[in-house]
Length: 374
Image (cartoon, rainbow, N blue to C red):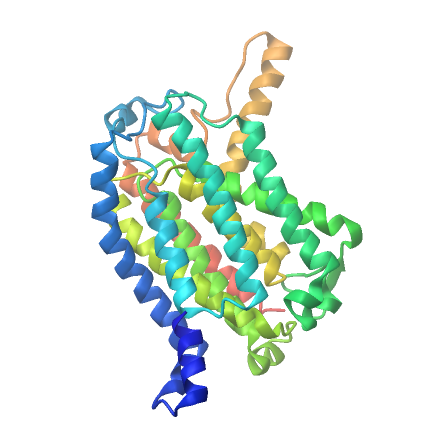
């Protein structure tokens, strides 16, 4: 809104310094600061309202016993994150940009799916919340819309995307691209669904999911800025996507929102994100990788989420296999997702979170290195 207002006024009168508002770096910084301020302002208000209405986390049977003390902590704090993300994006990004419109669509729809799940669990007291297959349906629909628009109408998003619509660049290799053809749409559906659920699984310790999301968002913001910059993309020999730079503003807002929410979600947490935040933020990360054409970078960049997801898959498959073969289910990990395994090994919760942050930062550095070490 501010961007468009200044742009309009500049056509009527000569506003001193208006050139700054055309700068992506200026608007990205403004979006990050705005998101942080909004999170700090809204956080106490929403937490107080959640407490008043007794919207608290129920005790989880699939978590270590030490988590019983967390029961009753306000949940649905994802409302703080989403407000602190969407409002600055509307203020500072070019909302006529198709990349921004698509990522807003992903955020709002998956945020609504997560909100419905949390509402059914903590307000309507349905233990399972929204049935799993319905959540999957919501994620698949979002993936189909994003994948379908890119595949069938890439010119609506960005004319420079037409030649790349079903292609993905390969990390560590110059000029190497894989064309998925018609399989590209299922790939997009898989990425958005997997990341949405991956962040949801990671959201099991105070500050773990939101801090990791912030680190990944910072990386994606850098990549989006470089992809949208003619000179930098040429220097790094990566596809130049002209409108991609606006996604850097969205990522900056996400970094600010993550930091603001982490203030309240760090150990010991005053509020939990819930599915309202985790499903939406996971979908945003997946969609962002799709929109900047770095789908194959996800196993590296989202390594923490991949590790959490694989630990659950391995645990369940091995348990079913051993129960069928030996009559008794056995486990690879003490508990899955893997952060609970480390808890049962005796690691303090803050230490686990800090070490996962370190791992996420190392993966961030490796991901950025793929653009030069090729």
